Every structure is written in structure tokens, then in C-alpha cells.
Image (cartoon, rainbow, N blue to C red; front, side, top):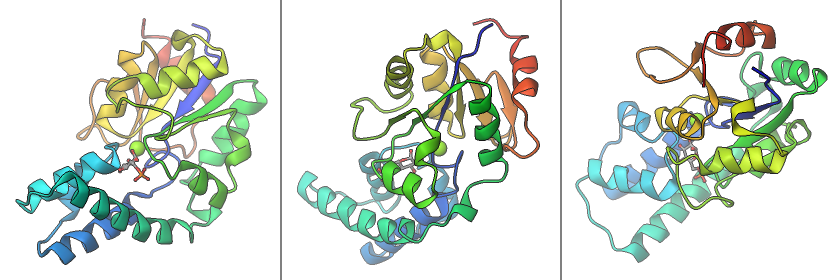
Length: 221
Ligand code: G6P
Ligand code: MG
């Protein structure tokens, strides 16, 4: 096993933006006249903006034309961006920056692989743009996770074989995308919510690269 790169999902792995997505979706649901719960919001993790809107409309038992959907998605995004503009570096999830420093010092390449079209703004607000050699976001892919496109593009731009990459993911579709791309996958979250990963961590606090490698060595891909 020869790991040369780590590819990180953004939302839920580097920063908890789910709460801001939730506030914006909830406001939209409320304008449309129905409730949108935190449980419903769980279904939107790792899901594209338009697909998220479709799930929300399903919850509210509503049908909208493609044109109306574009307007609603743009409205939600405007509210979301207003939250994201206020993000501060202290909202980086615990241990993430230390882990990035550790792996970069070891010569491991780093990339972001996210469905979010707001990725550049988020990285800028968190002062993290310089930590990633490559950023693949929702503007650069045509196929959503669990398709491996976002991660394969990341590996390709880094010039590293998929089998030499570890993906860090908090969403089930993202874990499947990494495995579909023949990459190692570290799940970030709770065992009751995720399956199919090679190794699971609750977060990056107290995590070392060595610990990950020791656990992944037991796995053959
Ligand atoms: C990530 C998040 C999703 C979000 C998607 C698109 O995958 O986990 O909740 O819907 O990105 O984000 P965007 O910022 O482009 O609306
Ligand atoms: Mg995520």
C-alpha cells in the first residue's frame, strides 16, 4: 500500500455547513407553506442543489416546472450564501487543520472533491484555499456521487492513481463514489448512519495519518 494523496469531501468533513443549508431550505419550505425537519435535511447530505430541491418538494408534496425550480434553487442559494459569507476559520471542524498540516508535511497531496458550487467561497472564508493542491467542485463535474467522477478527476489532476488515494467522506453516496472509483475510503461520522467504508472515524480530533494507514493496511483494494 502506497498512499500518495488524500481527497476530502467539504461539507460535513472540513466544515459543518449542513446547518446553514438546513436554515435556507427550511425558510424555502416555510415560504412554500410546509415544515421541513432536521430529519428531512439528513436526506440532503452530499446531494446536489437541484436534487435537494426535488427531495424538499417531495416532502411538501409539490410539483414545480423546471423554470420554477431554477428560481427556487437560486433563492435558497442566495440565503445560503449570505450565511457562508459570515463563515470564520474557527468553524473548521476540530483537528482538520492539524491533520492537513501533518499530511502535507509528509508530502501527501491533497484535494477537495465536493458537489458544492460554493466550494471556492467556503475555502476562502476558512482561509484553507492554500491547503489543497487541487479543488474539484460542483462546477467541474456532470455526474453526482455515487458516481466516482468527482474523485477520479481529483486523482487525475493530482497525477495520482486512484488506488493510491484515500477519500474522506461523511455522506453515504460519497462513500459509494470513492469505492466505485477504486479508492480507499475513510467514513467520517457514526456507524449507525454509514456503511461500506474501509475505516470509520468520528472526526479528525486526535487523528494521525499513521493510525489511518495502520487500519487501512488490513484492507485490500
Ligand atoms: C454538498 C452538500 C449538499 C449540497 C451540495 C451542493 O454535497 O453536502 O448538502 O446540496 O454540496 O451544494 P451547493 O453549495 O452547490 O448548493
Ligand atoms: Mg459531505
